[in-house]
Figure 1 (spheres, helix red, strand yellow):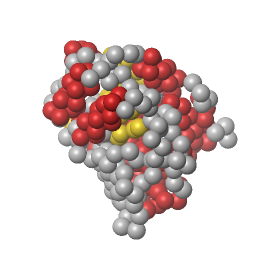
Figure 2 (cartoon, rainbow, N blue to C red):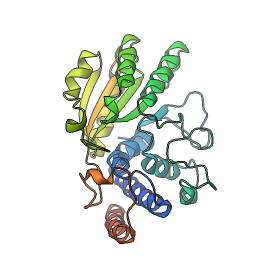
Figure 3 (cartoon, helix red, strand yellow):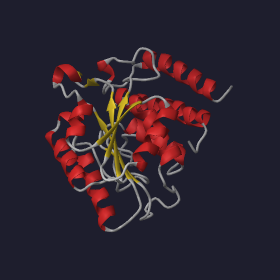
Length: 280
């Protein structure tokens, strides 16, 4: 781990607070899956990936694709803290006056490598990026984060097959396994388990990991980088709505904004968590 654990935890805690503010003030957005993925994105951008916010189009940079593209309340706060754009820009989330749309957008937002939102397409683009890197004999790596509900899309499995066929060991994907999607439990809507066995059968190196353990995530990404000849999938066990007591493991918080009372309670919890991580 190149970045100390306390710093990573503080970045994630602040990311959740910024994400909450974004969704509340525009009265729209996806908090549940953003909060479950926040620690994963924190480790990627602050500990794992080779990127330069001052040169976001560097052809040798590592690439990241948020395949579950609706979880911008995680991605945008992390990009802002990493220095791609001022945190004040988050105030215009989902506003016609700004560029931070509800789904990841690459034309106007620095640091976004692929516009996403139609589930299944992000991982397909990531496979294409990794294949291009192989063909161009580049050293950059490609990372992607999917939702476990997204895995119900057939296009996802076509992408998985392609990644294995072309031996894309420069590709590391993560499935955010929080067990919930917009209509309920993933096990009820369309069961996809056992994901580990299915992915192994599709030719992937599979690493189970606690998606809220920064040290474990960092070690898993390092292990993925050392794996040669096949792509790697991290199965990250997470909690939807992580960090806010009344949102955790509640399917109703997939895609709605809190009211004023809920916002105040959530904000108090997240402010306290941030203060604890910052040692205040």
